[in-house]
Image (cartoon, rainbow, N blue to C red; front, top):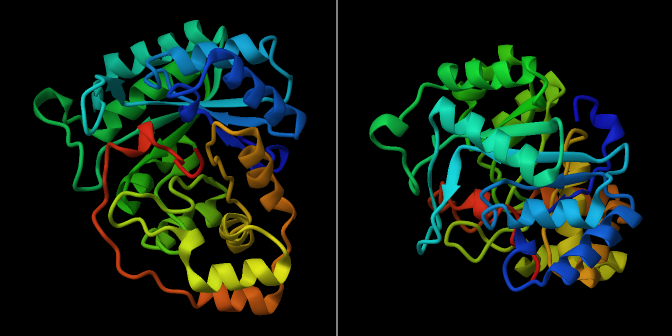
Length: 303
């Protein structure tokens, strides 16, 4: 991902491969994704925990040479409801999570690891010794990169000021919530575009959580989908791809049919009129940021 041009613009978010999915079904989805040209898979050692990583390894190892596996650190799995995660922000915990990734995935180096901060309120918040300065975290991430355990550093769930502080570390991608109906991170996207940083939005089609309106339910999206002969979800994803050249998508699904539909969004052509109408769409209001939920539900767009 250090060279965005070599990564297929529609990748795959693997979180859903744990819940309600057998190992055989997970393997079928992963193998079909690779067959369709996906070379960017997003995962984390706290998905499962660890089971998603193990399923990726079982299905795809030995890995294709061009496959970019991207993980994230900064949380740990608890299984509790409604948020099955807890903060794991300390440098030693970041290192331990990378070691988990390496072991579970069977890799000598994780190509990209995202530092999952918890800066955007409300939601899961770090407390006590889990409140860690980003410079201390980045120092550990840089050390892991220097040791060859990770290839590149990304950052997630951060405001613009934190990204700007992190830029000297050589950030290659940013994961923040963003969709046609939630453009509150537009300035962040502009900075990423200018800096050549991959923009990897989560909740790209919205979510059932309050504050993240579902793109496919929007009347303008549905109208344009009918005009171009695509599914509304494909129009929402195609708009993201057209909106910024550095956008990479990681929609998740447990279904091969929906996987094929998501990847097909890259072939949906939106004309100037359609883009103008979509650009003019406004969200019905921005709700709270459910910070801490995203890593476990990075793109819950498909069953």
